[in-house]
Length: 190
Image (cartoon, rainbow, N blue to C red; front, side):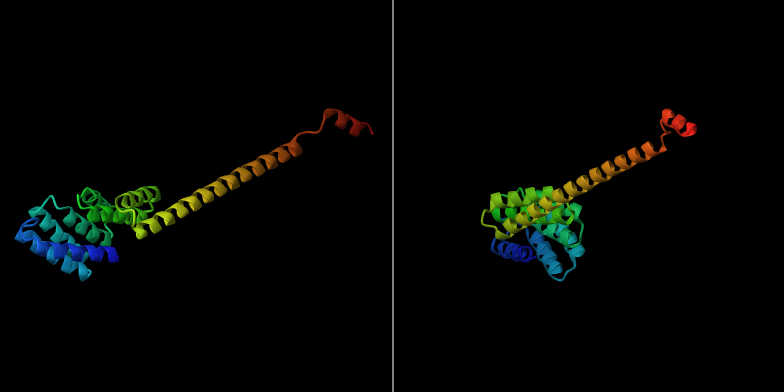
């Protein structure tokens, strides 16, 4: 969460320092308003402002990143994934690595562990010093290993149950089978 807020405020500061170079006046105003709404926890409204800003500056990876954050907070994970993938193409390594990191978080929330793992790996490729991405990657690896162990245990239990059932059926069949005809004769003659 801190990473998201920090990037939003860094983006706002960068926008004020670069008047007209990156954004038009209207796009800058929409982003500032979106950031304000985001800070207030009004994520759907922030999303709308970021969409308006994108109309003014459709190439902006930073607006897409901010929009992804608003969508994530609004729990619209599918659209957030799209936005993070778009913003991950940014030339700015800070935006790109943060996009991959947030994509990893989004995929993790959707229980897409393998995909999440790959996103964290990409975040680390972009920013090898990212300790949060490293920590999350390690956690996902642990969870995937636990999942594999659980699946193996379940498979072993299932095989054991099937084997027990087969043995029980064989015992029942041998008890239900008629006695040997010679034995019957022996019994009746005695």
